[in-house]
Image (cartoon, rainbow, N blue to C red; front, side):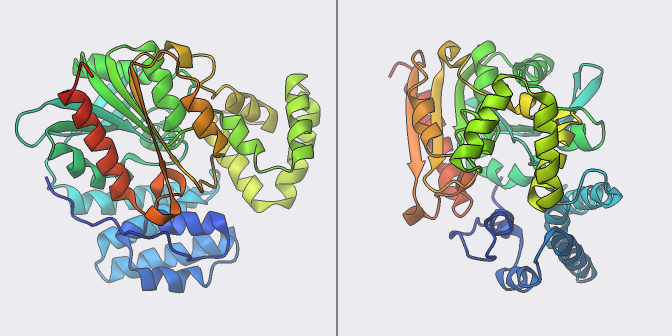
Length: 384
């Protein structure tokens, strides 16, 4: 299997707003830069994000540029509110166009039974003799289809590559309305059981930097775990957006379980700030909650501190020096909070590598190569 696209190198300035700019860079693999710049010039708020990207998706469809169109639908869907019917329409169109273009890839689709529902997986066989199986999942807002281009980096090194979506992600969320649990070992164990996998590696992307370590702490069939990137404390990521006084206030209110006060305060913020409105709406959609306080309590449970000492596998910890979503101190906190890891490798990517942003958007191939080469090293040096 070979890559159909080359990951572009360079984190571009496409929009003045950091949130829009990151998302536009995120899917640049599938777009023309000049076209994206024309679209970005017309984006001023979430309404224009939706209208501009949907219109561009339709233009690409008319020009028979299916994959371009697919990812414009995907990008549009990202900021559409969960209660807007256009969200599901855009999601379904993204998948229809995407799979119409890549169905000839050597992959097997599997539905994994899970607590009365199913979890979808895509299995990419190793090129030649299989030396390892790696399970790969996203985090808070990604779809499995976004990572298919990474598969070739692993399969050509003899690694079977299994992409899956767990509860709260992709199909399970959008089509079956299954929310995300913090005990990620449940879906991972269901997949390992169904596929009869007795030993594997696990890569968690974005919020997967919490989810994958959590699964590894409680399921020892996972021999190696990759946090791509670090996410030690989810509530810490959200509160880092606040000024120091507001951080202290939120922390105090959470400690005393001030449900009514938090709901009142956050409702006021949501009314005034459209990004906050989107973030809480999306968060409650993923978590299956319906009030800001309940969502924040769910977020608070996503911290690696309670179980990090149980991780005794080989661990690869990645981070970016300019990650706008995860505070840099979490990288060092997590590295210092793995006393029983069989081995610990850390890699902090920089702006000189065009890889300092969240999950190395700007140089995805560098990150993929690093992970694959690390896995090969572990396999070739089991008694290091």
